[in-house]
Image (cartoon, rainbow, N blue to C red):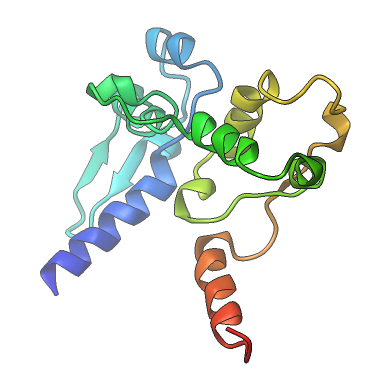
Length: 157
């Protein structure tokens, strides 16, 4: 039970104070422009901690730059591009029009904007940028679970 409480506090802290930088190097090397509400977090025991931008941004930057922690894993933008390339070329145009963001990390401040920046140069030149659509509606935190339960409840599954 104690681990679950800790996990919930960490998840809540992540969602309330972590952000994704549109330009990581500038944010990290510049002054912390976040207001006090964006930086401070109150723990369940009443302790208030101040989380500086030198911590708030590198935690999330790892998704886009795994080398920060000396990992050779694919970055998120590499995984998205790889997924598109593995699909039938005739379907790709429709996929670009329906990029669904789901899961807890997509709720981070700046996630959609950062992903757009990272993917922009990777799309084929014949695809109009106005045709690319990021879908962010609905209950993103549980969208994968909801979709899975819907498919699992089908009689053909």
